[in-house]
Image 1 (tube, helix red, strand yellow):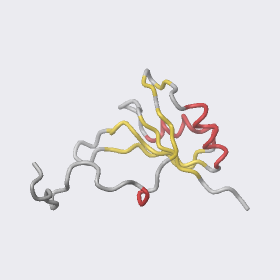
Image 2 (spheres, helix red, strand yellow; image 1 turned 180 degrees about the vertical axis):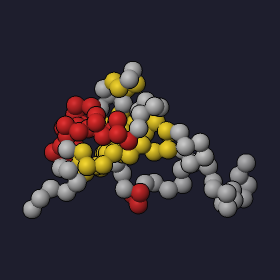
Image 3 (spheres, helix red, strand yellow; image 1 turned 90 degrees about the vertical axis):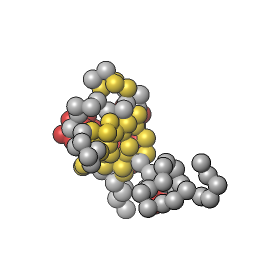
Image 4 (cartoon, helix red, strand yellow; image 1 turned 30 degrees about the vertical axis):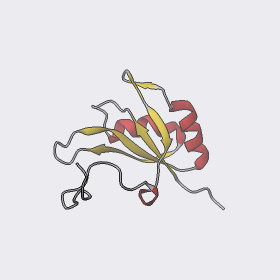
Length: 105
């Protein structure tokens, strides 16, 4: 049975890095997709992104080799990406249609 693709979170990226640059960094590990997350309003990098690798072994090696490494004088973090459904809810400010609980200030 072939290994499944593996998605990694990459934080602390240089502000000027684009998808192509991120893909080049992870190319030796079998990257199939690299995506820098952009701010919707300003269209500028938010300083993090995701890479999808062809194998779990490639992802493990990329984490080992690249986590806490320097790219353009910025120390990056490489960890397993969390599925959106697995994220803890209730963090951050309420959305525009949410109200605070009674008595909260």
